[in-house]
Length: 135
Ligand code: ZN
Image (cartoon, rainbow, N blue to C red; front, side, top):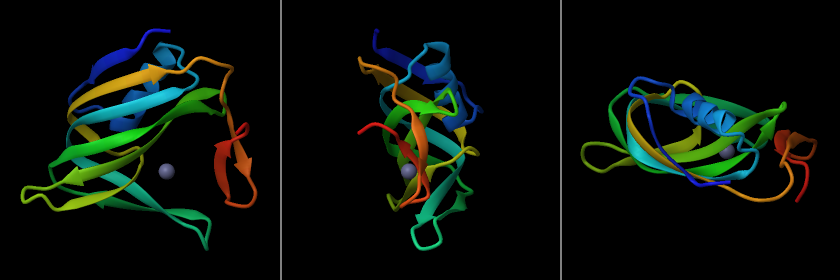
């Protein structure tokens, strides 16, 4: 499978657009790397004690300094698990686990499909997270 080099549409949802690119290209396992900028963003922090995501928002324009993650199957569909660091006007950073609810200003993504059998997520009791079933 060829590497995918793509630009995400302005105003689109960053995470959902990535998931869609993977679905369109039938990527079931791989790596993702992306840089660009957002109009606003939604992230999450996983509270290990509560075993629950706490979401938080960035309500300003920001650079995507680094956004990296992986692709596997969740509930039968390609799912990008992405972590992201944003930079503001003076370089201050904030980051977290990328959630739906982030609006693309510009985004250049490289998706590297990895050979091998499908990589699927399932519920992991010790962490409460949907983790890889094979490792
Ligand atoms: Zn995460």
